[in-house]
Structures are given as C-alpha cells and as structure tokens.
Image (cartoon, rainbow, N blue to C red; front, side, top):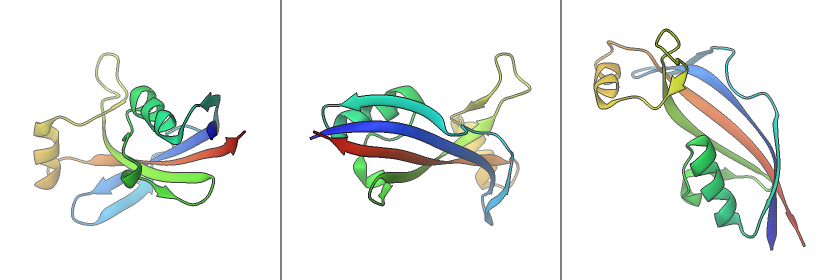
Length: 116
C-alpha cells in the first residue's frame, strides 16, 4: 500500500546532557507541507533520512497511527559561515557530555496516511 507524506513539524529545544530537554529555541519546521506519495513505508523513511537527516529505521520512530515522532541531536552553528543547525561533531558530543557545550534536540512530528 502506498504512503502519502503530508507534512512535518519540528521544534529545536535545549538538550542539557545531565538534565535532558530544556526550553524551546523557537526554531524548526512549522507545518512544512511535503505532499509526496511513496510506494512503501520504507521508501518514505528513506526519503526522510535522505532529505531531513532522520533515521531510515522504523524502530527509531514512535508510530501513533498517522503520526510519527522522532528526534535527532543538533548543534547550533548559526554564528559560523553558512550557519544553521547541524549534526554535532565527535568533539562537540564529547564537550556536551562533559557539560562544556549546549547541544539541542530537534523533535519531529511527521504526518502521513495510506492511499490505495
């Protein structure tokens, strides 16, 4: 059965290594329409991995009938050339785990439905 990817939203929140999620940064996707139909659920996950840097493994998502929930860790590189929210380097992950750097969790809600 085909799968239609309707839209996705994300919110980027502070992620304190020891304390977990903190306040929202106000950044992320706001109901971004996608409007693509895929031959399978797996093909949709591959698209999410290729285009948004999310996992292609269904086990990395909470699936609540038409909505997927997942997150990924990102670093704030807004002060750098071509800045933005990027996957953290190994050095950034180490500094984060030592309480020396703030990283962020980008929390996604992905809406889809099956079509015949």
